[in-house]
Amino acid sequence: MRNLVVALAVSLDGFIEGPHGEYDWCFTDQDYGLHEFFLRIDAVFIGRKSYEVAREYRDHNGRLVPGMPPVTEYVFSSTLQSANEGAVIIATDAVAEVRKIKALPGKDIWLYGGAVLTNALLREGLVDEIWMAVHPILLGSGKPLFEPRSQRIGLTLLENKTYETGLVSLRYKVNNHGL
Image: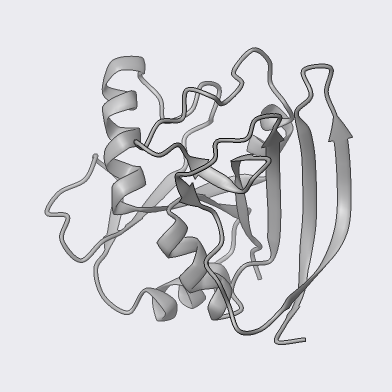
């Protein structure tokens, strides 16, 4: 079974976007472990809003993320009519589709973006790992990574790394749901 890995940048106060959708606060001055991570994945899950932002970036820069190898993109949206060549749009029963894709042979899957998608898959127990690049900034408001939940989710620290810039990389295994 393939692992589903939420991997993203987050502010110290838990936001993945600023109050106006901005992400200009994210460090891009070095690799921060992405090259090694890219060796682990061959597919990306992405929500519609994140996909539209990423598609605009790709149109101007050639790739979703600099240095990322070719991967299969799965876009989760009930409203998106078209996607880039090779991308798969998942419009119905996302949970069942994620279970099927995770069962296919292959490398790990990167849950690239979408707080709604991330939280939906966490609720269903489908996220195996969370890797956060915690940036040394307090945004004060914006889009939070995690929604309020009624049950705890246990985590085990797999790796941590501190960079000279103040960024802290934290990688956790998701142990269980509903402690």
